[in-house]
Image 1 (tube, rainbow, N blue to C red):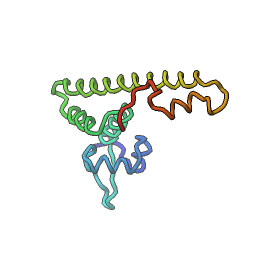
Image 2 (cartoon, rainbow, N blue to C red):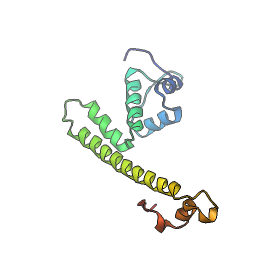
Image 3 (spheres, rainbow, N blue to C red):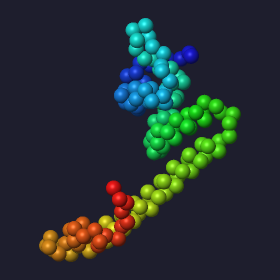
Length: 144
């Protein structure tokens, strides 16, 4: 592969992916083992840099490692149907929409707490009261 070869430090700087994370991606197979110099140092070419950018962007969008692995496999075989990629993206969209709904409910609960505060004494503070008694909270929580 022609083009500039980057050391792992340069690859990290250019891609915005930290060195230990690049090594981790290599270890778990998201990145193929890079070409090494005679001194044994990793070098990253254009293809590896593009793959790092793909992984970083997918992580920024919240895709899990296994979804990224599947998306990379799909990318590596561009003649197949994009149904699997669509299904992965749709599942992520559903999760994002669920989280947005939860955050909206959380915001409403926090607003209710703040509005209910009389700005008087802690003994009469609605914020403390609601936090002390989960039954007073209207926001639905998941079991941890």
